[in-house]
Image (cartoon, rainbow, N blue to C red; front, side, top):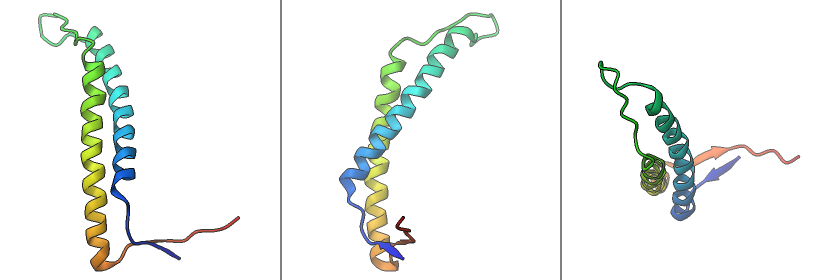
Length: 93
């Protein structure tokens, strides 16, 4: 049994930033493509989103990922100090 006592904040923040930015890009691509084919009003008028969604989506999700990474690692360290860390079992092959 191994216990995770502390998580370093910066690596978690970097991971979450890239992870969320990639999913932000994927989601933005679907929104961008979908907005080209789905009318947003009852009149059948198409209002396609500009290509800026392809930049804004990953940037906003990346910022959100950074914030979530920092706060989750910080609060994990805070809570683990008082009640103990997560225990995992590792198997060597």
